[in-house]
Amino acid sequence: MNYLTPIISTVFGLYAKFLRKFTEKMGVTRTEGLVEHVEQCPTSGHITSLKLKNGQTVTGDLFIDCSGFRGLLIQEKLRTGYEDWSHLLQCDRAIAVPSERFEQTLPYTRSIAHTAGWQWRIPLQHRNGNGLVYSSSHSSDQQAMDTLLGNLESKALSDPKIIKFQTGRRYKQWNKNVIAIGLSSGFLEPLESTSIHLVQSAVVRLAHLFPHQGINNSLVDEFNKQSAAEFEQIRDFLVLHYHATQRTDSDFWQDMRQIKIPDSLANKIETFKQSGRLIREQNDLFTDSSWLQVMLGQGIIPQDYHPIADAMTEEQLDKMLNDIKKIKQEPISKLPDHDTFLKMFLS
Ligand SMILES: Cc1cc2nc3c(=O)[nH]c(=O)nc-3n(C[C@H](O)[C@H](O)[C@H](O)COP(=O)(O)OP(=O)(O)OC[C@H]3O[C@@H](n4cnc5c(N)ncnc54)[C@H](O)[C@@H]3O)c2cc1C
Image (cartoon, rainbow, N blue to C red; front, side):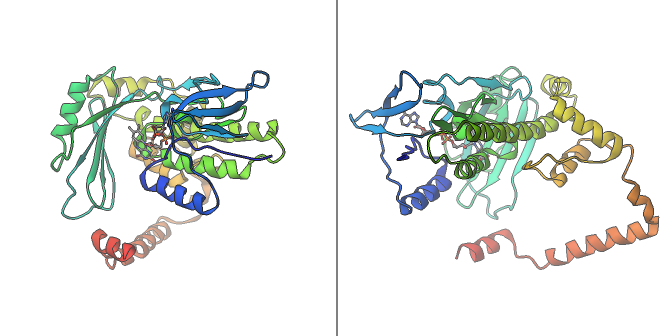
C-alpha cells in the first residue's frame, strides 16, 4: 500500500517549520495549495482525493486533517460530530495582542484571573504574547478588550484580534481513512497551553499505530480510545481550576463554582479530600505535583493522610523537610538570570 498523507496546513510557527524540515529530509513531498473539493469513495466512504484550486489532484490512502477548527475532511466531509464541553469550560473567546518585550526577560508565563476569564502574559525573546480568554455569556467583546488593553504591562504592537472557539473534541479523531490532528481534532482552552502537546502526542500515537496492510479497526479503536482519554484528562485538570475556585466576586466565578463536573474529576477530588491521595491516570500529562498545587492552591485540604507519615516524629519530619528545602535552594543562588541563560543556550 502506498501511503500518502497530505498535510493540508502548517501546524504552529517554529514547531511547524521543524516538522517540515524533519519530514522533508525523510522523503516527504510537500504540495502547497487550497483544497477546493474532496472526493469520497461511494461504497466505503473513505476519502480518495483532494482537488486543489490550481487544478492539481492529490490522491492518497490515508489523510491527516490539519485544517484547523473547520475540520475540512473529518467534519465537513465525514460528519464525524463534536462532543461539546462548553458547559464545563465556559470560556469561548480569546483576544490576542502582542506587546513590547520587557527589558529583562521573565522565565515564566503568568495567568491572571479577571471578572469573566483570565489573561495570559508570555514573555518571548522578541515580544510579549498577551491575551484574554473569556466567556461571551459573561462579558461583551468590548469589555474584554478594555480589560486586556488596560492590563498590558508594555506597549501593544498591533491591533487585538478576537478568536472564537468551541471547547470539546471530535467523537472520533480517526474516522475511516482520516486522522484529525490539531484544532480539527478538538480544542481545550489555553490555560495549560496544551494544544501543541496534543499535536505532538497525536503524531507519536499515529506513528505507533500506523497501519500496514490496510486500515485495521482495532488500531483505529485504540487510537480513538487513547485520544479520548488524553483529552478528558486535560479537560478535568482545566475544570478543576475553575470549579475549585473560592472567588465570589462576579457572576462568571459564581457560575464556575456551580458547574456539574464530570464523575472522573469528582472522584479524584473526593479521594484527595478524604485521604490525601492523588490517583494518577495512566499517561495523564499532569503529574501529582500539578494536581496537588491546584488542589491545595484552591483550598482543597485533605482530612487525612497516608499512615506512613506516623512512622516519623515531628522533629524528624521537620528535619527532612528543611533538608529538602536546603538542597533545592543551594543551586538557585548560582543560576544565571534568564537572559544570560538564553544567550548561553542559543549561542
Ligand atoms: C486562543 C488560542 C490560544 C492558544 N494558545 C496555545 C498555547 O498557549 N499553547 C499551545 O500549545 N497551543 C495554543 N493554541 C493552539 C495553537 O494555536 C494550535 O495548536 C496551532 O495553531 C495548530 O493548529 P492547527 O494547525 O491544527 O490549525 P490552524 O493553525 O488553524 O491551521 C489550519 C490551517 O489549515 C489551512 N486550511 C484551512 N482550510 C484549507 C483548505 N481548504 N485548503 C488548504 N488549507 C486549508 C488554514 O489556512 C490554516 O493554515 C491556542 C489556540 C487558540 C485558538
